[in-house]
Length: 191
Picture 1 (cartoon, rainbow, N blue to C red):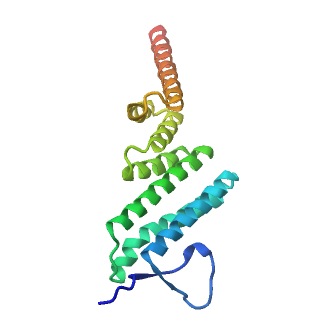
Picture 2 (picture 1 turned 30 degrees about the vertical axis):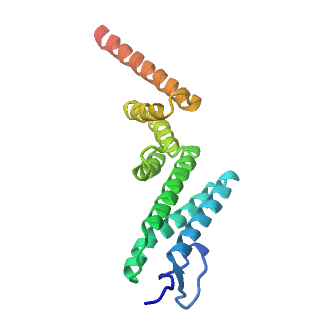
């Protein structure tokens, strides 16, 4: 029995390099997670520079590395530890949360909802993901769903001014919706 780290094989998809031979490299699970975290950081830098396409590309590859730890580990007989699984889940949740922010900036509401929901599946009390999903729901006029997320966020942090401001937007949206209903009712009654 050896004490060498278990390794898994993976193609370096994120490097974008192509060659005529099928080049693979052996990576430990720790190295794979480090690569995922590095790609997440590169995505964050691209996002800060408003290069959303590059940010999403880096984050997508980060997700592939995180997802790969278990699939490659199973394929090659390695086992990931609970700590490695938690690390992968934390990185995955953060990446999806970042993607939600990026999609909001691009006004891609459905994609923002999807990404925030994926982040919340891994971290149900992720305040930023709740806020981002609520904002996207609000933009789409799905006020009941936005209200649910805002309520949870306010339960977690009742005095947060950003969440409270989103709550005020929601109240305004409900008021506008009620006014439209009243106008529609008046129009139908007078016809």
